[in-house]
Length: 269
Image (cartoon, rainbow, N blue to C red; front, side, top):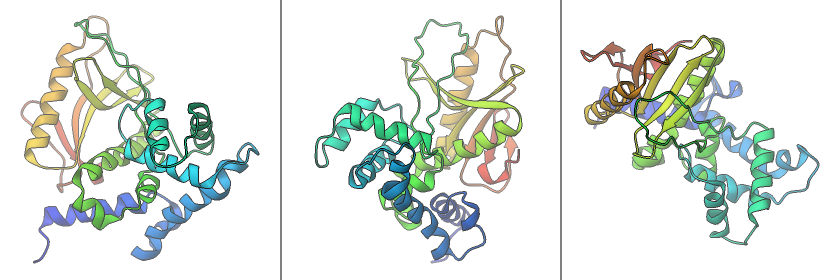
């Protein structure tokens, strides 16, 4: 059965996610392009993680840690949760050891967590300040999980989390070009926003990431409107835009409620 246009979009997004943004992978055959992130993963655990500060580290532990981190991609998992997940798979490294590996991976730009955004709200809801876990490029997470494009399509939950990370990667590139930063938001009631693009002049936009489907887009739009309504506009400006970034679709458009819906491939810095 031939793929529909929507299916074709999803299939292509799955490939782009696993291929990653590595310059060497561009314009290569699919097999060679997908091998780049796997080779990079091997280099990370076999040499780079030890070479960064001349501390010899166990490649097997590093690989298990990256796999655990990938399972918690796009979440606010605490370091202790990651350490417990690593310990549950084999030997029992200490929390201190796991944290030292995470620090080394941050130094070589494998991991880049996203900090929390702290707006002025009319409500008194406590804001969660934990970072959101992210790889610099989601292709490393896919490689750590041992999953390819076909596997992602069969596991939409994992696909959705890694797709969010893929979008965050691109948002960071666009924000950097605009002299801005990218944050996330979540309060104790569960109200959250996947990405907040905040410029140094005070302007900001709220973004929800949804792989696709009308129900999820509706859910994302409602969430953005609810958060925007909570912002105290007497002490800070209102959002410059509300956007649901998707994996499917050919064109961007603005809904009647003012929320933009934009396939990630249509965005430009």
